[in-house]
Length: 118
Length: 322
Image 1 (cartoon, each protein chain N blue to C red):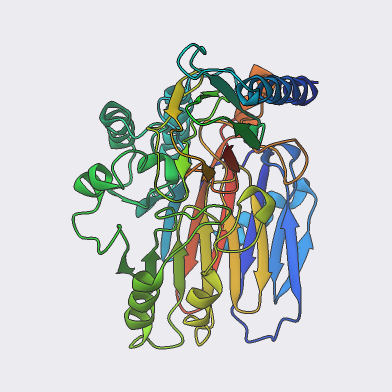
Image 2 (cartoon, each protein chain N blue to C red):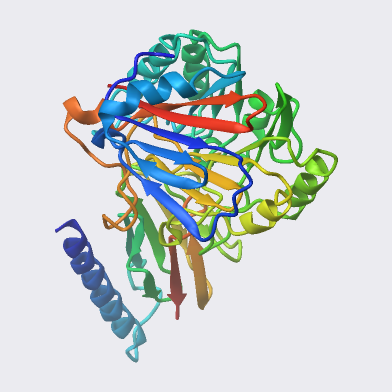
């Protein structure tokens, strides 16, 4: 049950991001007037949801640990690194450059995810 | 030895030179009352009614010690809101043994969040145990924020590298390994090149008849790689131990009892003193498993190890906290 709802949240987040991307990409839109973009990743059941998140340059991504066990958010390429996040603790990072940013939990390295910045 | 209660597993490994083909695997929940005995390289199951006679025969030894694991001090979620209480129960269990153990091994995840006060609490509780010394290895929860610096300051005074060391007790050679540092994305536990070289050097002058006990946090065999329950380069470490007739590997991390025999090596994981985790693949994730409060102590426990000199045999007995 838990897992299913997480998937739905993940899907919604993806749809929201896609919508954001579409509006950002439309002609005549100005970066100055747009709200700062943000996106969420849920850390739940020893996995990142969504595992791959696509965002626009300048987006702030926030990870929230929903597990009973601490996790970390560590960029494989050492671009960002959270402190250990206990239950309900958050970590945010703003992606100012386009690229693909793989990351993992350094405590449970089987947990991997990536942020694609376009 | 202490009066044996129901929920126990007995594991006896005789070094009799029998070439064991394939592997034998035994897995049981502490709470189910299963009993497994290794004899002449063959794993046998016994009904609990025979437990008394078997322990009486096996428990007179030269060296006995206790393994505790995964106390996760600081954890306070529903799976166990009182991890200090269950660790105290473990100590009471140890103090109830008819012959005090020579020492204790703690196979990591002493703390939940690497906080000094969590380590303090564990140290304080373990002081009331009747075993003189405690030998530690770190779990990933003990080295969270500072690459293990504060762990080493507290527990690693005589250790090398990230906290590995060895010692001898009554003819048994103990090797403490660290496989929770520098974990790579998508990977398992890792020992690393420097530690592997040290292992090779550490054992090269030992006689092949020396019983070896290796202890580390993450299992040194592939319990369930999908959940990270294994160590990438453990095969190399075990290769250095091939010449020895009796090798026992004690691990924690997976919060449940499992055993496996492969050639000359007996692998054993201990229960947690804090909370149980699901059997491999039996849940969406390896997170803490909630069991009814009255059943909790049935799935937590300690491991009591007994060595009989001259027979190169180690008997490993798990007791629940119930």
